[in-house]
Image (cartoon, rainbow, N blue to C red; front, side, top):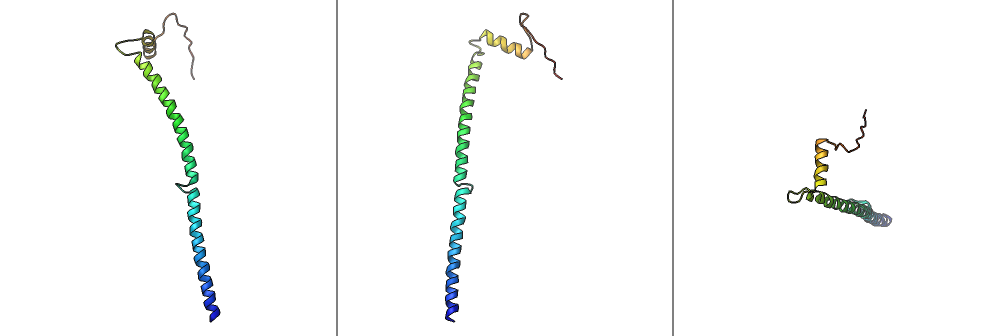
Length: 105
């Protein structure tokens, strides 16, 4: 009988330590690979860098667009810009322009 009590106490201790080790392992793995883990943080940092560079590019593109729009304002119209926009929208060409016709299949 004494051996059964010892065996039961030993197995209970082993089971508790095993469960504790499994829980620590589970949370450890999730801390590394989970949705908010270390790997996810590295991926988010890379995405932040990519989006920051895209934001800078888009800001530059917007500045250039605003500059082009400011040339078409009613109070100060740039003749070259106006001529370019009219030709583009009406598909006209100046008689002195060299036009190349490309056939598409």
